Length: 390
Ligand code: TGC
Ligand code: FAD
Image (cartoon, rainbow, N blue to C red):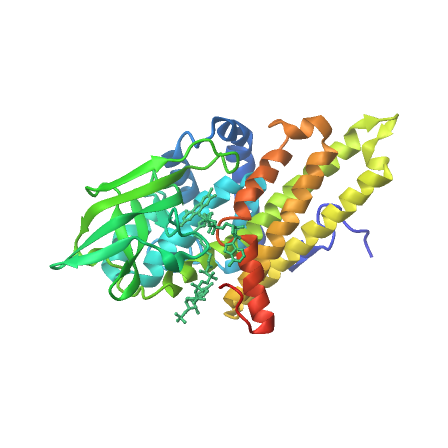
């Protein structure tokens, strides 16, 4: 048998189909050409300089809502979509986030719970990157416990009137449309809110130390009056937004594997070329231990992502499978990024190398879409049958 390839130690690539490999290579090529040369500057500037251009480029690439069927969406397999997320997050978590929020949250909400008119109005433009969406669930006092949200939608004749504040909303200030979750007399419902509606405003959140190549905003809704058809008619209860989160969390499972891979690759290359005490630092036992831990984490994460993707394509993926992946792959990526940063010595603290950028991004990735603790409790509940959330 052939010796293991350091870049694909467990030969997981062999389990991909030709179509899946084509998607991976197309997204990797785009990412290396269009994103990687710029991302450190975007991160340094603390913003995305041209979100509309980026949305259009992602639309042309076909990654926006790529796993959704119809309405101009790609209809790809879950594994193909996961591979796209992996390649994007190998560049930067903020770029995968852009695609997740558009395709797995905003578009998925309209696709799952929208009327035919809403789907026809929004999905083709969003798939093409001509309209940007955001997804407002979290509030200043309601993060891990979204059931405690205060944003309220009340009926006034046939209209709806929304009041409340959403916090930490990715793409909130650059979006054309916000999917906003609010309590009503009938429980939690979703609303499609064009961001030009009077009473809607978005305030950019500055001074982030993580996910800097991403726009994050507060949404303020003050007597936002919407017609009856702004309601997502099939949305019912907290389970509706949570089912969208499953889609985005699934992308994060793969994305985290990509960030881990990028950090490991950078550390391996650096360790082989950097010399101290007259030899490459890769030759020291302590460095080899770090590299061994990293390659194990990277391969575990990659296999976990692929297994969950296969379950999803078979129709057998429970939301606790996704929690398992989000919990384990993000933690693995955090370990790899921290070790890779140390292998880079002083260079590791700069934006000349990707490792610390990934390391601080992963603080966000471990927080959003359900914190590490929330997913630990989901797994704990799955194995014990006992809920420890409250
Ligand atoms: P609980 O009573 O357990 O559940 C309410 C209803 O929802 C069902 N359910 C789910 N359905 C689908 N998918 C899931 N993952 C589900 N989890 C629960 C559940 O069966 C129940 O249905 P029913 O019919 O019985 O009513 O609700 P709870 O209030 O106890 O909360 C459960 C908990 C803590 C797991 C949940 O609230 C949670 O996941 N909290 C974390 C919040 C979170 O992840 N927020 C993310 C905001 S969006 C974001 O971060 C975007 S980041 C940008 C990017 O993705 O890049
Ligand atoms: P809290 O819920 O206050 O948690 C604080 C700490 O308490 C955490 O360690 C948590 O794990 C712990 N904790 C809470 N409950 C329990 C418990 N029962 N048991 C044990 N520990 C517990 N939200 C959106 O809706 N849309 C977006 O687009 C979006 N984008 C984001 C982008 C960024 C950059 C960031 C940082 C966040 C984003 N979020 C978004 C919000 C994100 O989903 C929340 O930050 C996350 O759900 C956690 O909520 P919180 O920050 O209020 O923390």
